[in-house]
Image 1 (cartoon, protein in one colour):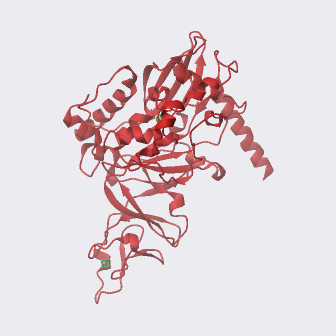
Image 2: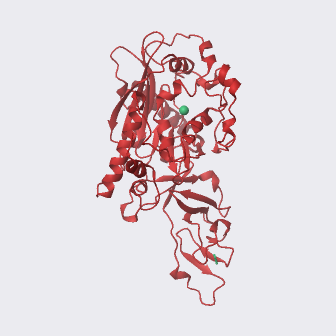
Image 3: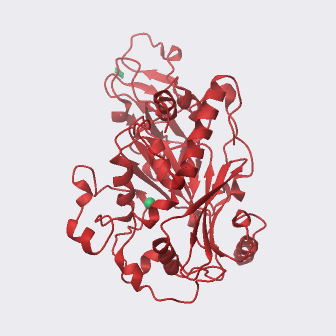
Length: 444
Ligand code: FES
Ligand SMILES: [Fe+2]
């Protein structure tokens, strides 16, 4: 449970709020590269941390992220003409370059364009995402490279989904392994044949689902790290082994969720404003699993009953609060736990239905919520710390070495080593990538 005051600090992100100020110290996704693919193409609206902005790619390919409102008399620059290295307001023709500088006032008798400059934020394009820095210029730190800086173009995948609730609610779901034993359950998991991987080592993705179903009482263990923390949900398998799903939290708003044998794909939860969130999911390394550990992903199981849309670009919402996420009460009795046919919409139902900003004075936290509690505590401490002059955490470091993982543990095996540079399965993957890189170079 949080006090009303702490819940306000935790959730509000507008300019001048403690959390808004903290988040503005980090580079954040502003839009997908694919939303502004071409020079002089249509600009897009970007609402970020409660600010209304417009992103555009100018004639030279440079990206501008500027405030939406024209400083003349307020028309939206979203409707502007993107031409000759600038965005021109169509009301009276004032024009702005990517730095926000007014470069032309075609309707004025005596141009004072040089005196007019609107807010523009620094951007950095990487991994299919246009990242932006909305904080004070003097405090700007280098772009945090999660791996996208060297990601080959063929491996770039970035996805953006909108969630209609506060960003912390959406984060909470990502740091909550317990819910997969409930929300995402379906009865046909019982029909997954035992393929012999319920033993120490890497289980198949299909068997992993069985473990989620078998033990709904995951024990949660948290390990603090320089970048935030990693935590494990530990379940007892049907054969009595300990199965660990390890998820990494990267301060302030991203996670790398557990996967067999280890994971690098990141989810960055970006506050649009206090009541809406964009979830960006993106690759940071080429796929590397030379022995195919885990086999096919769980959602390829022939009796898997849910939609698992291959995501790409800006995802359209079909399952919404207005249509009750198309809940099928018959399916809920006989097929699936939630009755909602799309996997990610199950998460959205759970997080959105708690309200635009969940009132955490009303919550009753239990043993499954240890990671969520740690998240809130870290965020609150950093937001209050920044307000009293402390440097925010995780601004610098080797972000490419952060991974999630999943494995059935051997006797005495510590989950904390899984997915680290010391994990043999990681070394094996890195070697295979290196070999593939060399082969690629030789082919040139
Ligand atoms: S309102 Fe934009 S030029 Fe007049
Ligand atoms: Fe989920």
